[in-house]
Length: 259
Image 1 (cartoon, rainbow, N blue to C red):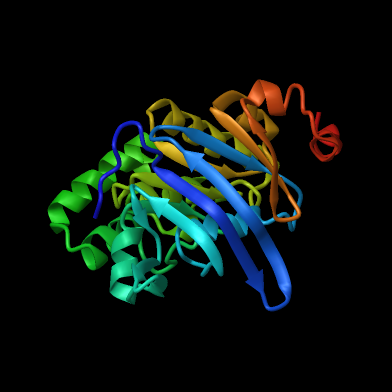
Image 2 (cartoon, rainbow, N blue to C red):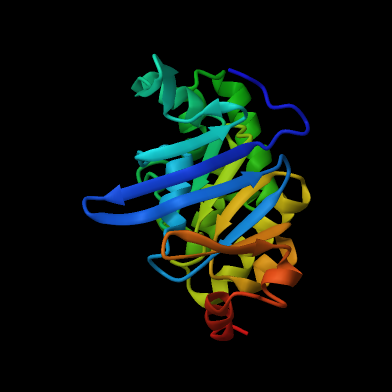
């Protein structure tokens, strides 16, 4: 594995294309994300935002282009002038540096909160169980759920379950964490507690790519905002530029529904 220099982007996407059968969802995405940067991706449903996140984590194969994380191409390796898909074990190793938080919490219902958090570090990555438990308890404190270690997901609110999911994503000690509309499945009164946790992570210097419709979060927490539409990056820049003074008519039309 190559290590990224301090100046190099942690994430480097170039000309990324993705299709599902005849439907072209990503049409040449270029994006760099620096270490410690928080990038929020906005856009209408069907614009390719979530698909792009899933390609970064190689939950979806790309048909063209490249995605690198920490200097290593995700999912493929060059061989004799062409790209060859990596083995499942190699892809799993790459995913160790990338955490992901989904719309649905995807917690194991038969496991306690603590068991959910240590499952991947111990069962997949082979970490010492006692060390993993200590780290999990520290992460629960970090997301404000120290008293829920022995609870089951059904005993938690949606906002609490999503904060557990965030702790679980952090438990693998990722270099990068991806958030795919993490508040979209929550009741409105529970959104704030999850966004507050995410803001704390942003302030602690975690590299984050966040797909969301929460314009307030983008304005307050993002270093850069990317607006996608129709499989393209239409506009990107600082929040005060893209949200406060959008230049593209499509961005203007989209934001007018929220602001």
